Length: 367
Image (tube, rainbow, N blue to C red; front, top):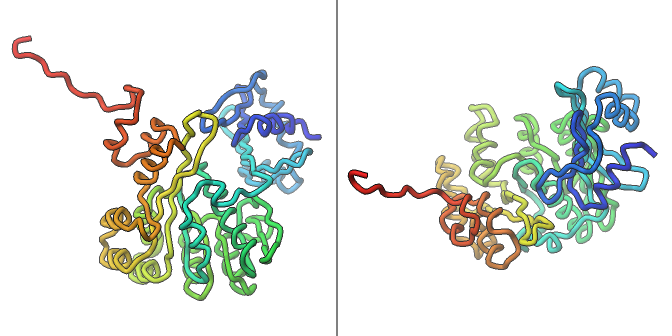
């Protein structure tokens, strides 16, 4: 058993989302959003390097020796699965291990709106799941892929960096390919996938113009495409896609979004009232004729008002979802307040006065 497995086992037992290892500090666990040290000595450079090298393959070890960061999946001795990032910094190496659940929770178990399940009924188009790093995008996508796997007879191809949740083929066939192991880039992965008779393609990260362009082509040519971006709202997502491509393709990109983008789901993780867990809360924008028109005429800033007034279609702003979850006592109001765009409606739920904006005290004349 690798020595590092002891820390990982402790993290899983404690229910943490991540295990952090760095030189000069003890191992730390990400517990419900907070980073907490475990009772252990500060890690020495040679000690931590020994822990990490022990779990690397020869090719990974060579790449790391050449100065490259590493992203890979790791299965511990007791079967726990982790997404790993290993890097170098001023004081030595560091590593972060993200725990991957052995069982994929369903969309309903995650408390996500029924609209997400209905989106999986589409046969063609693009669905984007967005949010900052660590907001549960991968888990939501895994749940959507699992729903398809359980309910439809499809050929599903996932392109990931690295492979996280391992999907066993059920009603569908699921083919999982890993960046650097099976494909040289996401763009090449999408290009190859379109020659493999896919029904669904999941693009782990749409991080460059070529990948975005290839994903758009796949969606336009009869496939259901899932993708992710590190954006924090539907408007920012649409603007990012338009701005990512060359200016001469701007009109073509707006046309694609108007016709083939099905939805943008933007997700945050908010602490539960007892502080012992986190719950996914999301903004949902569905494409409508009115929203498509705003994209075409460069008026995306008006999209939030349409999302706000079309809840009957399954849409919701993040602020609306946060307020509903507070009212249902599903999330901590003070943590939700930090994510709110318009904080005024949330102020009445906040008990920590330090979080609220300070008001100026009037001074009497001549004082």
